[in-house]
Amino acid sequence: MDWESVVGLEVHIQLATRSKIFSGAGAAFGAEPNTQACGVDLGLPGTLPVLNREALRMALTFGLAIEAEIASECRFDRKNYFYPDLPKGYQISQFEAPVVQGGTIVISAGEAEQRIGITRAHLEEDAGKSLHEDYAGMTGIDLNRAGTPLLEVVSEPDLRSAAQAAAFFRELRALARYLRISDGNLNEGSMRCDANVSVRRRGATALGERTEVKNLNSFRFIERAIRHEIARQIDVLEGGGQVARETRLYDAERDETRPMRGKELSDDYRYFPDPDLLPVRITEALLAEARAEVPELPRAKRRRYQEALGLSAAEAWQLAEEPGMAAYFEAVADAAPPRRAAHWMMDQVAAALNRSGLDIAACPVPAAQLAQLLQRIEDGVVSGKIAATIFEALWNEGGDVDAIIAERGLRQLSDADALTGIVAQVVAAHPAQAQQFRNGKAKLLGFFVGQVMQATAGKADPKQANALLLKALRNP
Amino acid sequence: MNQEVLDKLTRLAQLALAPEEARHALADLRAIVDLIDEMQTVDTEGVAPLAHPLDMEQPLRADRVTEQPARERYQAGAPLTRDGLYLVPKVVE
Image (cartoon, rainbow over all chains, first blue to last red; front, side, top):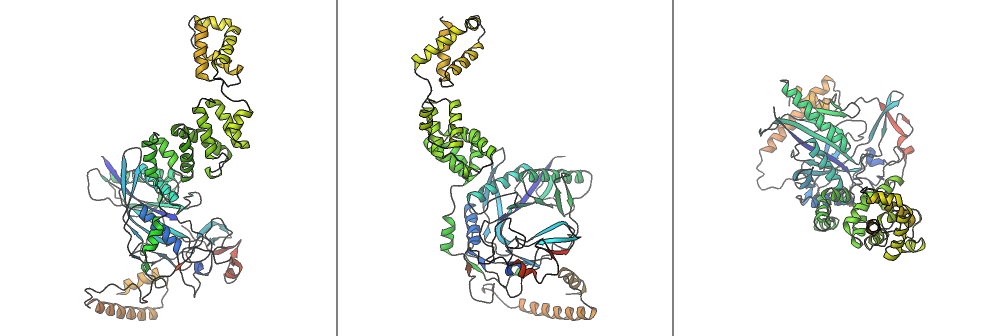
């Protein structure tokens, strides 16, 4: 039987504000337990929430970037449920009148681009963390995260495969980082994802019964968990059974989803308007401020890299994914051949960053120096191989490309007369190999090039050495 | 509004009502629902929904950290803490 899968994602994005969404407590990650939870976050009597302007501005920036509708007013509601890491017994969220409605995110998952509809994006507060390690048979509660601003982005059920779902998540993360509304740090839980998954026979228009898969916090898990859940549902249906509407947790260790227990009552959240918060007016001034924070977006960047700079789709993807990487690349490509710049970024620069565990923002080689180095390869002043050693020197000791070339005598020997002499010496020193070459052992040319390189400490222009060697070997 | 709905609501609100309290609650809630039913009959054509009784806009806070850590003070009233964590009866997911 031919099945089609239908997937929608709900992604919680932690907004990178300094303080909480409704209080003046700090929102940094990794503080000592409960040192960043103030009276408002703890839900103490007599406290009142006041909305963080920057959280609202970030939500608006996101909405504008995905070309959503932004109403002139949004409101906050209470979502009621009991859990120890939710001190008030309700979460302040947006139900009836979210800040962002509609909009589109365009993904490309190997195939052509695809437009994924966004149903809504709303502001809400995060809950604290329950630590289930054993505290004398009890659960530990850290409320530092309580009140951290979240933007929950809900997609339409427009995704048709696990790979597309992962591509959507990836695009959303890139977008959040470009817009500087989140650090997108998956290890710290800055983006968390739930998936609504159903299957139906291909060609059917009605949706099948869906399950919600929770706890998908990495690209790999999203794809694996959804693929697994699709296969499970098809198995159930082909075995004559029915998919039960339920919430399932993904267990990465066992690579399976299993039903969550004790959820039968929790679907009834009894939302109602939060009387502690007034309707929020979205002013023109606020919108203008939000609009000013929308830069060139990843998709536009990728297109420009391909069309204007001649990069492949894969290269454009890799370089445009992280805004810091893209900015560095553009600075280099401004003053050096773009394709060479792209290759160096993905090869030497990426490898060196990886080795040293550094982020591109902390790259010790300024973009201008790398550009100069690549320009020297272009000019024929140094070979690619010598350039790699100069790059290493720049990385470890700093300095100026031209000064390093001059001081260390790294200028490529492209003076034909000097090189011709060396070539003649090398050929004369290896008469047996020269004879073998003439007898047809063509691959010996590589040996001679190697000898010339050795004799010139790598400074010979390989192309020129090749040509001169051929001439010398063929016409003794 | 009947006993079944009341049972569901008290369960969701995690309230344990004595039979006498439950009888009162049911009567009160019925009266409230009746009042709402009556309000529903009012013609509100052309009247904008009221989101909040105060005719004001939500003031906004600048994104500044104004609260200093005061864990000891906040945890002074907690029944049980350890390593800076609040301890609660084991929660099984």
